[in-house]
Image (cartoon, rainbow, N blue to C red; front, side, top):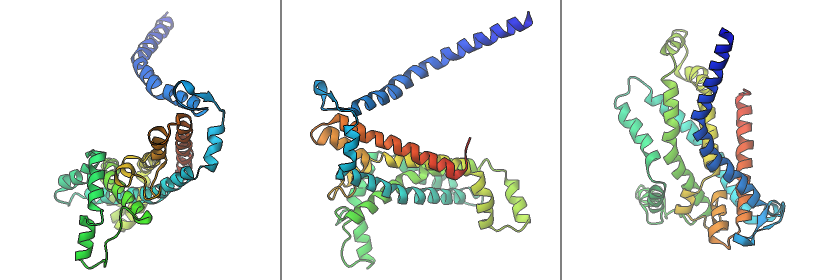
Length: 296
């Protein structure tokens, strides 16, 4: 009798649990999974509006002969390979410094470094474009310090335009990752470091033998999130360089925008390009989990 009552009680709990999760399931299904399925269906079509026609994998086959797409993939991977490691290491280094109990004004420094994350993407991009223009503040400082003989073409040079984008996104997102590392550091028992000091471990040894291993799950999380964000990079490139000069800074997301709204609209091909981002995110995330040794 007691078993029957307990079983019925569990069933009631299950019903109540599903009732609470139902709104989230409906919202996620409507605004995440349905658009993903619809985008995949669209990627198998060509044209727009009522003129859409089924073309199968023709849009995906076109990717292998599209020079602009290949250029956008190359640019995006360049940003990923350079900016993400720099940002992760810089955020980790800053978080260790700001976790020091002897440091005065920690609250100010933490706020100042995190503040770029809450600024408007468009606003800060426009400011960076002004700072790095030929007659901008950056060139003036370097010229006044006699480090340059002539201004650097930060926006109009293919090489320096990429550097400008990398500097911009590093400035904005380093503080975001720093917050995660600070939270992780504050959960590490100080007695572990005290024991290491007694054993004669230097600060560098403590960092690589204690801090990094204990922060491994957070480092993996921030790396995956940063990779995902960089593969979807759009605002900075759109507002600072507009993808120029000559598609030298164009990213995959910007190319999707151009295919949909700037060039003759081709939503089917744009959807196919967008699915390349999905595939790249899945592949790179799996690689990162494998490298980190997280098989769970």
